[in-house]
Length: 160
Image (cartoon, rainbow, N blue to C red):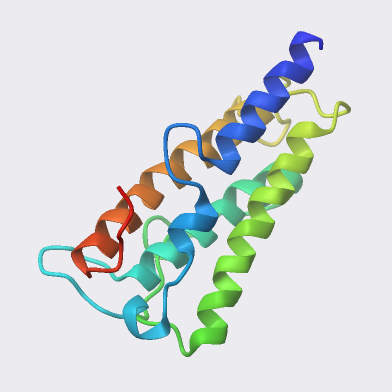
């Protein structure tokens, strides 16, 4: 295997999680609409707000990567939902499916050998596909860790 493909495969594993932290699917499974809207003392957000923030930020990165005309939302308000809870279970599950689909879309971009991992985007300030893939992995890992802690505080996490 050549070094380029090796790097693409490492990035894919990093974005899909599961090497040094819990995979996205495991962390997000079993969340109910009732739990998603609960608050925990000393935390400024709910599970729903964390999940939606993950989705919004992921698509901001993905859309920036794919669309030279894309405009990011205003920081920080545009990256966090105002609602404390999803409207219903279907809305919650739709957001989770969207996160999974966004990661899959970023993996497709990374795995396409026609996409140069190191070439700066003409519409950016030096950002590359490599940088954006690492940003997806880092951002997801950070907030998935928060979701694990949140679920523990709710008594909804029984894994070690």
